[in-house]
Image 1 (tube, rainbow, N blue to C red):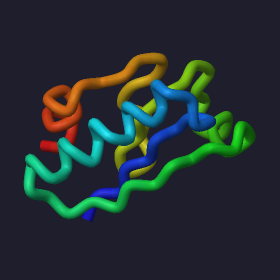
Image 2: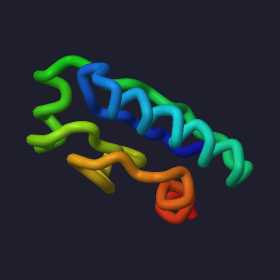
Image 3: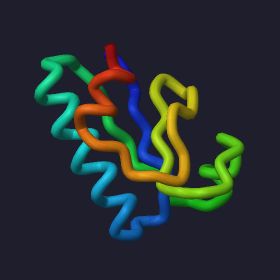
Image 4: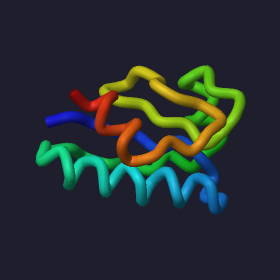
Amino acid sequence: MKKIQILGTGCPKCKLLAENTEKAVKEAGIEAEIVKVTAIKDIMQFGVMTTPALAIDGAVKSAGKVLSSEDIKKLLV
């Protein structure tokens, strides 16, 4: 099972990225744990300077933009 982390403080873009991620996981038919990381100190441990960001299994895949569910599905495969 994949671990997907949404890095962001809860802004509208962060929420949209979370929604797109949930949609992508459902459409791809995979099992994944989606975790929202909202504490600044925790986000900084990933080396991310701009949010929202997306990490899959601990590796940052995107930062500073909202990926579409289609883009996220490509990262999950």
